[in-house]
Image (cartoon, rainbow, N blue to C red; front, top):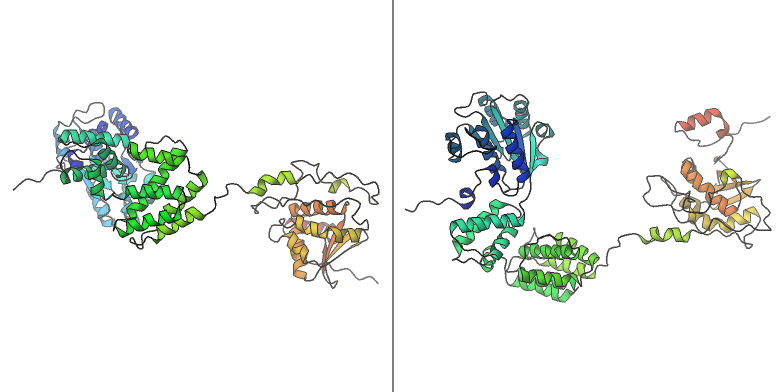
Length: 557
C-alpha cells in the first residue's frame, strides 16, 4: 500500500522567519525581539488566509525556546526545534477558536497555564481564528492576558481583526500580515516546482498566483492540483482547464463590447456563455478584473497585473477608446451585479450591459457652482439722478461688490450654497412709490430667498403672503394663516437669515425699511423691531432661546 505523501503547503511550510514570503516587516521585528530578549507575553497576528500567520507563530515558538538561536532564528537542530517541527512538543499548544470558543474552554486553558513548561523555556499558546470566541470567553481570556505567568506566551491569529475586542487588542503586540505580492508568489511557486522536479511554465505560475487572491497556501494547493492532474510540462491552458477559466476569452470580448457600447453584441456574448453551460460567475469575475485592468492601464498606475503579453496588448488597445467616466460607471455597474440568487440567470449581467452602454456619463461637479460667480455683477448699480429716496443707512448697507459680498448664506445645516441673487431692477422703469415698488420687485424678492432658511425657506413663506403694504416707512407683510407668520418670525430670529432678508429687501427697495409681520385679519402679529423687543426682559429671554409669539397692546384710558 503506497504511503500518503505530504501536501505541498505542509511540506514547504517555512521553518525560519527569513523563509516567510512577503512579510519582511513582521519577521524583522520578531527576530530583533528574540535577539534582544524583549519578547512580549501576547501577540496578535492579523491578515487574510494563507499569508503565513500560523507558520510565523510556530517559528516564533521555536525561536524563543531554541537552545542555540542564531540572530533571532531557530537552528532547527536542537531537541526543542525538532519536537516542534515534528508536532510532538508538549509546550506548544494550538487551539482552534472556531471549535473551542466557549468560556469553559478558556477556563480550562487558564487553569493549565499555571503549570510550568515540561521541557521548554516557555509555554506558547497559539489561538487560531480568535475572533470566533464568545464574549464570556473573551472576558475570561482578558483576565489571563492581564496577569500572565512569566513562562507563558500567547499568539492570537485572526482573519477578522475588527471582531476582536479592543480590550484584547490593547494587551497584545499587533502585527498585520499583508497579501503576498504577485512576483514573490510566482518566485516561491517556481522554487517549489524546481525542487519537486516538475516543469511548469511561467504563464501557468502567474495564472495560479493571480487566482489565489494573495494567499500563498491557496497558490500551493492549486499548484499541487495541476501537477497531479496533468503531465509535464504544465501549461497555462492546463491551469485554465482545471480552474474552469475557459470563459476568460469571452470576458475579454465582453469588455470590448462594454467599452464600445455595443449592446447587442454584449448581450449576445453573455447569452453564448450561458447557453454553453459555462459558469456565469466566472464570466462576471473576469469582466470586473479586465475592466479594472483597463482602468489601471489608462491611469498609468504601473501595477503588475499578471497577464500574458497577448492579453496585455488587447487591454492596452482598449484604453485609447475608453472614456474615463464611462469606464468608471461600467466598472461600478458590473461590480454590483448580484448573481448569488440565481447563478444560471444572465439577467444581472444583461442589465449591467444595457445600463453601462445607455447611462449618461456621471457629472463630476455641479455646473451651477462653477457658473455662480459669473452671474453676480449685481450690487454696484449706478446712482439714479431722480431717486426720491435717500441712500440706505450704513447698518443695512451690503458689502462692496466682489467675492465676499454674498451675505445670504443659509445656516451650516444647509448643504447647498446660497441662492444666486436675481438682478433687481433699479432703472427708471421701477415705480418710485414704495408700495408699488414692493409689488414690482416681489417676485425677485421671493426668488432670491428661496434657498434661505434653516427649517422653512423664506421664499416659500413669502409666496403665501398674499397681502403686503408700506405704511409710514414700515413694510407690513400680512399672512393668511398665523402658523405661516410664526414660521416666518421663527426664521427671522436666526441672525444669518435676518441679515440675508435685510440685504435682499435693501437691494429691492433701495432703502432700509422696518418689517412687521401680521395676520391678514389683523389679529396677532409680530414685528422685527417691535416694542416688545425693546424690553430688557424680553431680550434676555430671547438670548436663552425664547421667542415672541404675539404682542398685546396695553389699553389706554
